Amino acid sequence: MPEIKKVLIANRGEIAVRVIRSCRQLGIKTVAVYSEVDAGMPHVQLADEGVCLGEAASSKSYLVMEKILEAARVTGADAIHPGYGFLSENSVFARKCRENDIIFIGPTPEAIEAMGDKTKARELMEANKVPLPPGTATALKDVAEAERVAEEIGYPVMIKAAAGGGGKGMRIVHKKEDFTSSIRTAKSEAMSAFGDDRVYVEKYLENPRHIEFQIIADTHGNVLHVYDRECSVQRRHQKVVEEAPSPFLDDEMRAAMADVAVKAAQSCGYVGAGTVEFLADKHRNFYFLEMNTRLQVEHPVTEFITGLDLVALQLLVAEGKKLPLKQSDITIKGHAMECRICAEDPEENFMPSTGYLKRFKLPSGPGVRVDAGIEAGQSVTINYDPLLAKLVTYGKDRDEAIRRMRVALEEFQIDGCKTTIPFCHFTMEHPVFNSGTYDTHFIQNYYKPAELRMNEDVSHLAAALLHEHFVPDVHATVPMNGKKKDPDFDEMAHASSLWWRNRRS
Image 1: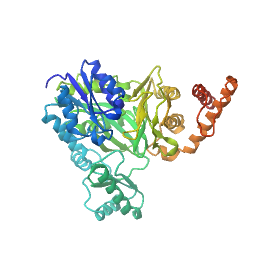
Image 2: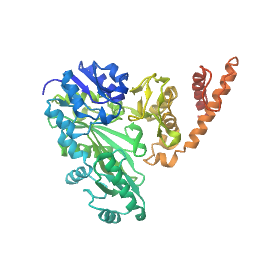
Image 3: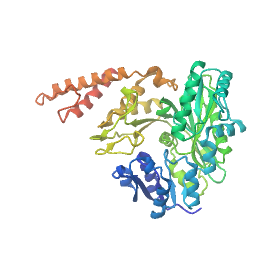
Image 4: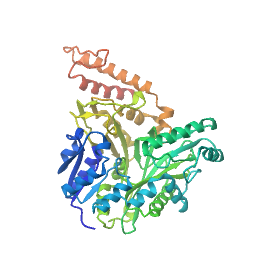
């Protein structure tokens, strides 16, 4: 396979920026694609070339395969990196790249198909003796069969879309009376999201931990694991906070799960970077959940604790080269924490938030990394995923990583839309999270938006009092609508927020 000289990144935002940076370090030219509303975004500015795909809607831009392939042909790109989301797990797109002699920086279409269909993946794992939660390995034929399976494995059960992920087409059912309506809703949502209404049923594990293993494989039969990540802080089955390594695992359980992750990748002839996801119960039993056939959003925490550049390894493997590592070369050093900074309102059930970013001031310091896909002066719209940036901290141990995250969250200033920063503060300060004993019900069990609002109100009051005390000539006021009249108020509010949090702790 020829050496890659130019990569088109079929994505946007922070992941496009991330891929471009690794390419630049390796001397590889890059092509950004963008919609009309993304013309001024950082990934377009950083790339060597840019091609506009069309209107804002992803269905008319980032999801149009022929437009992306034509952009690669016009610019002479010999490879396409799909990032995550959009076309990253689309076997049809991967196959079209192959047919057009363009290197797809990811697994083969066959591997994507094997793992992309959840029921096929379960069948494959079952054949390879990979532990699965009790339930069906194949899609259910009708509601009657689904009800019978649910009765056999016992409530609560989870209904899942066979063709999907990301929490879509998924329902937890605690009692028989709710089953029929839940399965109809799940099937309808699955059809809307994936064009496929097939579902399956599995036992719902109570107090589960969501733990995943990063793997990387080459075309020479080498499959390595790059250790584990904990992803149990979730809202609507989507991750908000991740860390590596998992505080739940001991050496024995970590080794057992790593072996299964490698076996799962080998079972489908996997090539490239991927993630094998598991659920673990309170009795320390673990079960295969799914395999994501792409780079994960949370890959930076793995890079921090191993010192590896996973994007660089993706590029190397895509060129057909052998991995320059043995399993014994990959070790865990320290601890890393990631907070997803999303344009969502944590006080209103994480509803999307939009607006013009008047301020977007990034934190810095030892052990702090920010992967951002937007800048001050740009607008957050409803067209795409709400992820604005990933804030990652590293420490010699978990406590130091958490302490650094608290400070970094205080320094991160965004003005123009609501974000998940206050919720991330809440998580980093919660005793259950700090003890490492949390599970996927963390938000459901402990998070109360009213308390978050109260803390913010007290913080703003402290800001007003400090401002009045230290800048008496300005006489700044905070009107009832919450808008600040004084131009220096934001800086004072931030300073007083630090003061108030220090006082509380």
